[in-house]
Length: 508
Image (cartoon, rainbow, N blue to C red; front, side):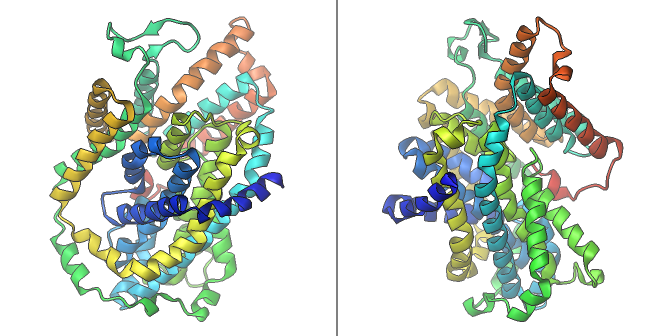
């Protein structure tokens, strides 16, 4: 209860003009990036990450939470108006949003998307606030062997979640683990794999890896794709939206039903707690469950608002779920929380079981901003400037990506003040580009790099405590639990080979 009280008392920090400005700017920037096909909120956060050095920890985390929530709901704008999902998590929204647009109900579809996003974001944030302290207390029961098995479980789940390309995902994860071993040894004062370069003594910095993997690689991918946006630009010119058209009628909301909203939120939240699942998987499962239980399944895909509500409620509830493993175990639930983990580490905050008790005052404002963004900023932003967001798709791509590339390179240098690390960011960008081009999911490489140091440390400590006996991972109850959980996931995701997820669920 003390933590819940601390979170709600943190709303007072929004009265600070600096905090409020960064939360608003973060939400607008996240929405813009999510609405532009090819860009994501992950890219927005990666570009803005160097700015966190000049901000207080509370302000930086509040801005990140705002970008996160905006990124989940912003993709529905172009998904609805021109059938081009601005974010992978909005793929299912396009199935019913675009048919409503063609029926002349585009504004109404956007209103339903905003309402679902607001409800999902609020429920996800409230569940996070209520559950996270208890999860943190339970995590104290996990000892050294259990921590290794947990991290191994997370990495394995991320790999096998990439259905259809598990070998590529496994190799990418191994590349990430290899990058994590460069520099000082985790247990002994010796250097490894530096090849005589003193600049590598401290290892490869997290900032160049993030900026290279997401920003520079994205620029190279889009530049090589040569996407023709002329048809989308023409479609945008025909779209006319009035602000009063955004409000969904009460009859539509009643027809969708509170049960649909809440069930979709729960699906999204619990999917978010699984490492690597992400908003696209959450929206896909919620959408298919809604179709399965509907009395009119044939209406989905033809402009049924219930499909929009299910998809948007789920992918915004993922925000709260994905933060649970990130805060309590230091395991990112998706790419955006991986970058948020970087913000914590950069500011000297180590996620883990003690975080909720020792540094709750730093985390509470972030959760307050997440809830504020869902309840206030989603409907307010769409009502005020929603009609203009759909024109973002017509921005010249050559100018846009040139600016992004410049910000990425400058940001990587400002973050480390190291020319070597700046070139390392470029190198990581080239590596990530070729990995993506050949079907390798770079998110598994990033998570391998992030989890690698702790994975190695807990493995070596466990073997040292057991005098080199590997059976210690099967004799300790906490470790055995995660080993069994890993086998369960392997069975359901690999051996049984369930139905393929949509392409959006495979996006990096």
